[in-house]
Length: 208
Image 1 (cartoon, rainbow, N blue to C red):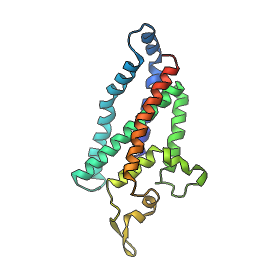
Image 2 (tube, helix red, strand yellow; image 1 turned 135 degrees about the vertical axis):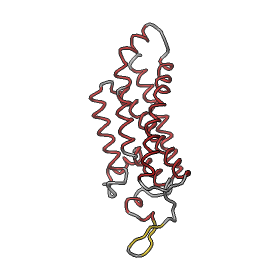
Image 3 (tube, helix red, strand yellow; image 1 turned 180 degrees about the vertical axis):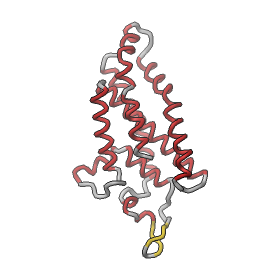
Image 4 (cartoon, rainbow, N blue to C red; image 1 turned 90 degrees about the vertical axis):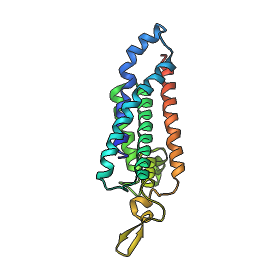
């Protein structure tokens, strides 16, 4: 969930500004509207579709995956995923505005997301020290931590060879940890605003 809904909105958003650059240059040269007006309206106009698809996805797959069948856990998961989608979209907007070349931006986005995926803590638990810092800027790392927190508490257990083991000690969960939920949410919120600010400044730099 955290990986697919990191890649999909990111790659979708990358093409927003490069595809509309000529139109935007024409409209801006005639003074039709301010850059800030275009930027805000473009983001707001995309929100319904950006949020509708992941909402539908979670509504179907949550129950199929056998996750905790309570309204509280379901909505917790949904909110986390929607926040992750908005952050990934913001990163896509920033990359598209910075590069303004669709192919180069797509390649850069793929490299970044694969790096975030590997440092996220699910596939690789022993990340070399010289690249371990990537997890602190990884959307997937924070999304994965929050999604774990939507299902498990620090004292939850599961059946194992020795009887009952703590969920927090399971290898792929222990590496990320169940603590620091508020910190992860704050980090995503900062990325949510920061990426859009970078995108706006990048558009200003192009002289639009």
